[in-house]
Image 1: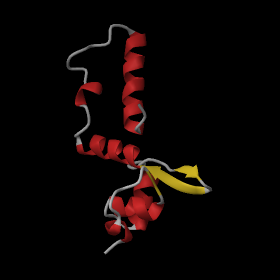
Image 2: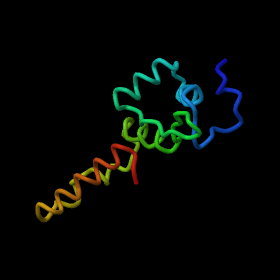
Image 3: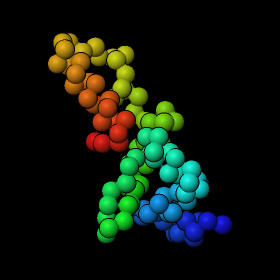
Image 4: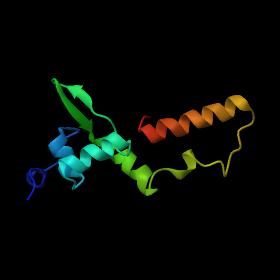
Length: 100
């Protein structure tokens, strides 16, 4: 049993060990996914790297296709000009990075 299995809830900001347990990954596998860009980079909080649970959830939703597909689809709205196309691309990149 991993340490994370004992938690009654998952904290908003998680250390590496907790974040890996949250995803049911070993710490090494978790680090590989962070390094590859599949998972978000940590933020330094209290002099230690922490991962934001909502960012992890957003990247997993995007990875599994469970995210809001309308935000990245051109099905219902074609950009009118180059500026609109640029804005749409920026929105897609922010979603991919887990930003709002």
